[in-house]
Image 1 (cartoon, rainbow, N blue to C red):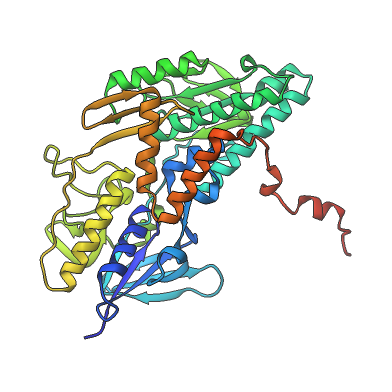
Image 2 (cartoon, rainbow, N blue to C red):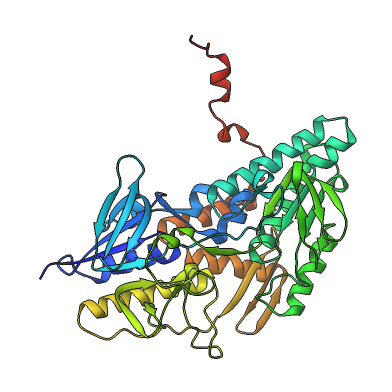
Length: 439
């Protein structure tokens, strides 16, 4: 019998963990695993705030695919179409013509993208916080704005440069805001021209609370801690416009700002629009608890999905509820899905995914955090330590765990690096300026 051809679309939490487990649990004569992703690495997104703040090296928050998936075939490119009726996927490599890949089993896990709104000026002036590139850019940009604020003598220019607006009060927004403010406050010791009062950090949240994944008292504690640090928290407030970098809010306030960070939720990757897979009203792939793709009452043989892009019923919640789009579920779903694919290949029945959400942990900067795990609520340094301990245990590979721990250990003895490397974002600018034009 020929080996089963398993195609993994996307190398995020679901794709990487599933491919890794399949390559370990299935023999070469049983299956061939191919992983397709535009990036040569998986980004461990919970570490993006710490990478952006300089607590860990950005390289240590990503996992190289070719190093970890040695028994898999890696294709660097983007899946542009899936025709499950033909069990064929079209892939656009980095360079060259498109190619078609046939499969017997497919794992559809392209993940999610920022859920943006048609707000005037957002496309031109906003930036997300989902990729390592965005995290590095934000770090360099914030430090660059400190340089601008320190160098200028114009009060308006300084106020605009030192106003930092974050939209969205979920985990991504709170952690990004808290870590970046912590870094900037630490950097001010090298800027005698500036004081903490010169900076204006603003959080804009459309609902009446932050961190909806935890109880209200923990969200209220988070707001209180941020207010004590002088941050401007705007609840029940919406971003209405940011044309020319002027942030206009629904409460009537207007804030000129060079930094507008959008962290207001996610939506399934748009590549799913070019598939014949069934979707729900939120554009997620519809799944059974076994993580098999289902169209009404019909199971699509050989199609599997999980993570942010999938509607997976939550068997621990009330009927009609679905698993939240979190790394906690994605990692566990990936393992269950890989085991189910192995079971199907070996002629056995798949097992439903069932996991009660253990809780959440969040960092509010160095030595500060909140945590709610199995009903136990923790605050301050203990919660911060739990946040670090949990995430270092979840990042794939022993290599990455060691590197992250070393980064944290060195941070106890060495000062944080607070230098902007803005030339990374346009490295050819100086060269092109000094090179004569021809013709």
